[in-house]
Image 1 (cartoon, one colour):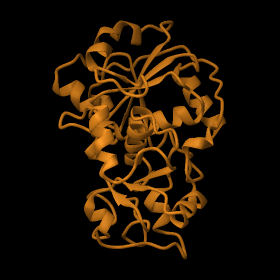
Image 2 (cartoon, helix red, strand yellow; image 1 turned 180 degrees about the vertical axis):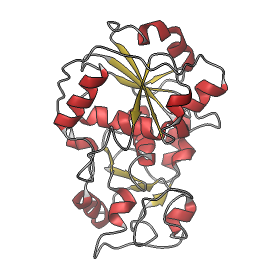
Image 3 (spheres, helix red, strand yellow; image 1 turned 135 degrees about the vertical axis):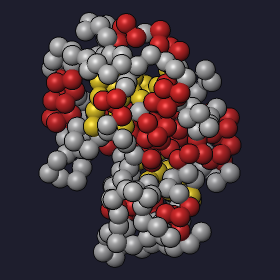
Image 4 (cartoon, one colour; image 1 turned 90 degrees about the horizontal axis):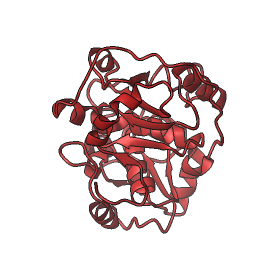
Length: 284
């Protein structure tokens, strides 16, 4: 596997070799699948994988926000995950919501968390073992730390980035960036206006992955972002529509390249595009 700034990726081969551990209540290893298509897990998943629904399990159900600290602790504890476990995450769409979940784990201070390189599609298409059996693990008392606000951006942070001309990475499609469309086809969360945050560069989330869904090398990622003057020397804000695709870019920048001053704006376009008085730009 390619060398990166941090040891945060595991290969499908490695995961396959540890399937027995993922199914062992006392192994200290937990495998978690988080998908866009939340029915995919029910059909087939890696043995031992816990299934999380990103809408109902990983978001507050009364406030538009990620889980509170108490909610995060309860969700992990009920799933049988301990704060001392090594958690390996994967999912469909090249790990969109797996990266989003990874970011949440980091936000609440869980350091020993990794992504399965290539995600669900790579696992399935390369004929690694699957099952429809749902694992059962003993409940734990999960104790979170944080939150680590240094990896999260809010509206005020984005306004500050615009005022100071700091790097903003819009990872959506060119059609969303230009304002031609408000959301990818079939997805409902939209904003009143189309366009992008002033000064943002359009660097697609897909640009950081290979055709098979695995992440590009350190050198390739460094060159990709370097072409836009992003080298980790100043605060970089990543955003998309609801915060999941931008988590992929945040992972590439913060974790793989080691650009520690990178933040994920999870409010993203569905917040900014609905704000009264917030400036936008249209076109490319």
